[in-house]
Image (cartoon, rainbow, N blue to C red; front, side, top):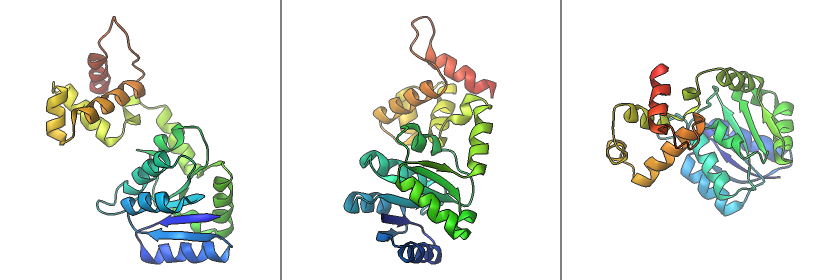
Length: 213
């Protein structure tokens, strides 16, 4: 398979590259940040992108966000996410399209070389491969308040909505455009299961849901 690797740790990145080459795969590019991943996927059209979640500059979820963006730009791209911890903020978006070809493994799994290569092959063939701990966290979150399903940015928007900010004021506070604010609010309504209803004000219901948490 043709693979792109995105990992900011040089030692781990080179280790994954060597492992893939020895297993007979072609490594089209090996990069160290999210934007470079998106560019590499566009340039090389890999079968699978192996992506670390935490990359520069903030080392939070840049890799996962970049993977979501890359998959949107090139829908046929399969993604195998590696993470030291279970990061679920954007995991739903990665899994939401239902096309498969997505994997999420904890980095400890890379120690099991055969298991890692097997997961890569299965993701490359279109399967969904999730670490048992990721499955457990997804199931646990499914039993929590729906506000927990929001991304960090959507939670910021909802918090400002609860403070009575207008869309324009939210945009100014977060330094984003009106269109982005409207998109975030639309996502909030969807995730909180608030479909259009002429008899109820979804904005008020969203705020009430937030205040109950």
